[in-house]
Length: 71
Image (cartoon, rainbow, N blue to C red; front, side, top):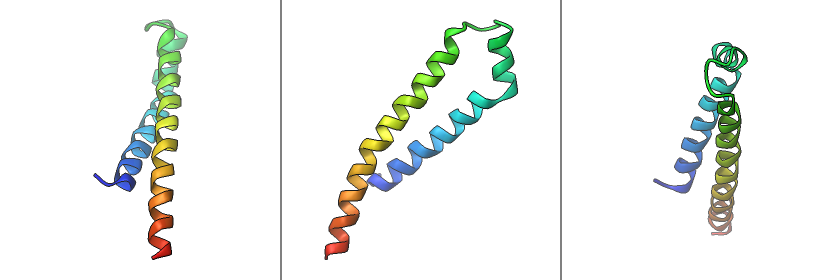
């Protein structure tokens, strides 16, 4: 996988997880305490770490793009 493909996959994962975090059923599960309340925290952590990972990959993509632009 190229860095841009990795970045696209991370972004796709982020969007899917963000959709879950905003889903009414997910929010009801948490509100009604049918699942561990820390699940919301864990999901937030996943989104945070995906964002951090995407930032790292973006740096590689930018460097590669800049190198290709100079040629």
